[in-house]
Length: 296
Image (cartoon, rainbow, N blue to C red; front, side, top):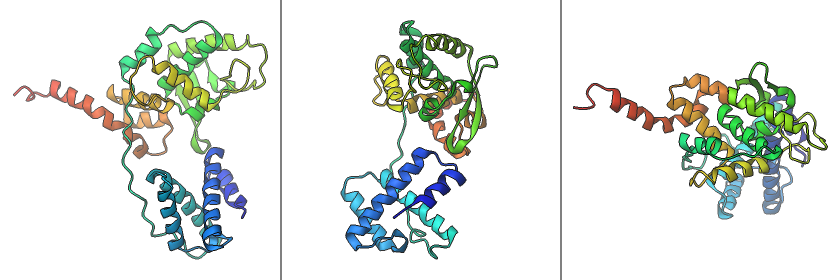
């Protein structure tokens, strides 16, 4: 069955990213295939909760994590809410569904020493790829930008005169983030080397490969993993961990939670508060060192 009206609604009215909309569509098609094979039903608009529960059981048996299953069911729930809105159904079969329990993922940020080791102690050559990689790392750590946001940056987003960067975040929400002087210097060096590329096919994009095409997410991940493998023994070394480190280090230095929220592009404080648990250790240290009764 076609989900075009629904996906158009997500893209045009809800301002969801194409990546998210594609994921929703894939989840709906998976469920549609399941009920077609199990119940010979061709419309997921007519199903009941026991049928959905059997789908969930099949996902568990296929080894999907509770987190992945919850995401798939959430996509289905969003679809049924849309059908309620358009009057195509009278009752959401998932209205009383409770999400599966998931263990909280503790993201361990890089230490300030590990960041320093990469940016100050590693020798970056003066060629295009090395300076681009340094710019990528500095931008992640100094702005908390998301990987997809970095990939989608345009040349016009970078304002070296005012030391700012315009970022297009989730649901097309724009934010302006300040750039440190050191980042501006690396950016200027990168732009000069970018101009020396033999051919550029994606002219408007800020970050390019050496072949002159738009950088891609897998390459960005590889850059972070490669450089931080030289400085950190942590299991996970990714752009998201750098974003996590940015938020944690700011909070450790006393930054206001609301300010960090704005820099990260979060729509609510709840999303930013996941980073505060890393700051508790720092707060304890300050508390012990500063409290009058700590020595007693």
